Length: 372
Image 1 (cartoon, helix red, strand yellow):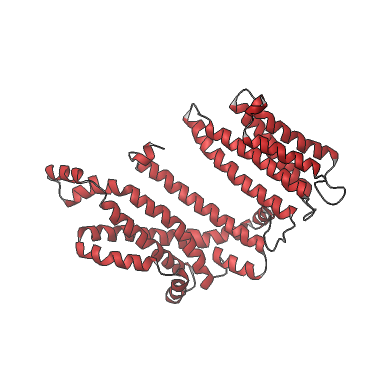
Image 2 (cartoon, one colour; image 1 turned 45 degrees about the vertical axis):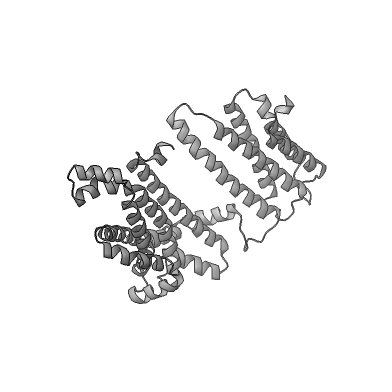
């Protein structure tokens, strides 16, 4: 039965034995008391032995979840307030808990759900576990090693700053995302799509614009942003102009490439139906180009956010995500900077996720969607 243990369990047991030999977990008294230490090793032993004791994958996943996250919570709660006092045993136990979480993700990934809802839940749970453990390891390392907060604050300090400054963060989001990003993204994508249709219709436009598109795509944003600020002022309009420049040509290039994706047999079939250019475009070529168009939309969703934030470094009213990042860095409020970064990452992920869902609904016929 012991031979059936997965390698994560074997390695977790080995690290826990080394940690037990290397006790104490913290260099100063009182540190971790005997009840906490026994609970830590008990959770690790139960989690490591679960693969041969559990009768089903669901039971194994539940026990592994409790063991890994319970051990992590005991370790981090114990080191809080005693930063920099962790010993080798502390980091070995963190690695042990991480191995149990690895085994948990492996078990969940191998499950075959019977319902569509359960399948969607698993697709969300597995990446969520990965994300949570990035934060757990970040928290444990920064607190255990005593890394100065000004260099790298732990996620708990960033979360506290986030919760304490919700009105400021909301105002920054309104200025940067709901004004500059959305306006520039819409104008850039729509105009890029329209010009792509014209370039597809007229050969001289296609041959003339494509090289220029490649050149403009290589322009550094830090060179364009100050010029846009001088042209359009310090408010959100100049940031939207930067976003337009960054999103126009990716949409143009991808749309032109997508309009050429339809095969010769399909085009010949449309000719046999006596379809003109616009009928062929609407009924054949645009549907075939949808994966390319959505690829440009998803690329532009991240470029737009980056462009607006960087453009705010070069002049803006006293609000905005880029303004907040630049000013708080000067004040050494690094936790506030990370809170703004977290907001930007969350907004970008939501934006990208919404586009991905729309893409699945529109291009349900595409092999990449049907095979997913």
